[in-house]
Length: 69
Image 1 (cartoon, rainbow, N blue to C red):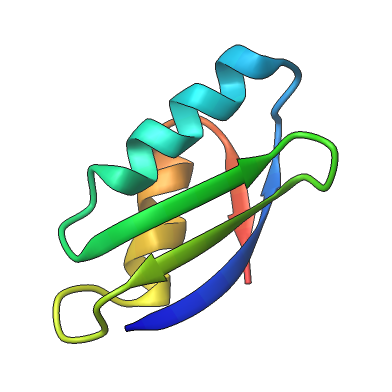
Image 2 (cartoon, rainbow, N blue to C red; image 1 turned 45 degrees about the vertical axis):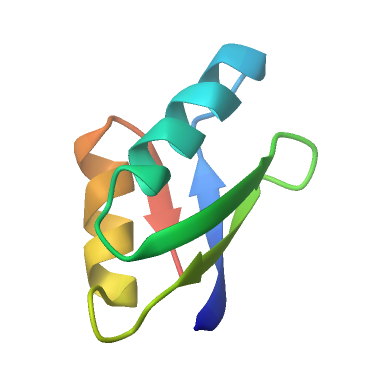
């Protein structure tokens, strides 16, 4: 397992946090996603054999939020 911190933009409330969490946990290979509104980031634990950082960024951006490494 690898752990990665993504910078997340566009979150304004707890609903956004739940949405981003759901998006990340829906990506195959992600075992845990802890999203913080205060820090504007997400700490993601994933299996590098199943997904990669670029796919995680793309999933968040497809959900309508900004994401970067």
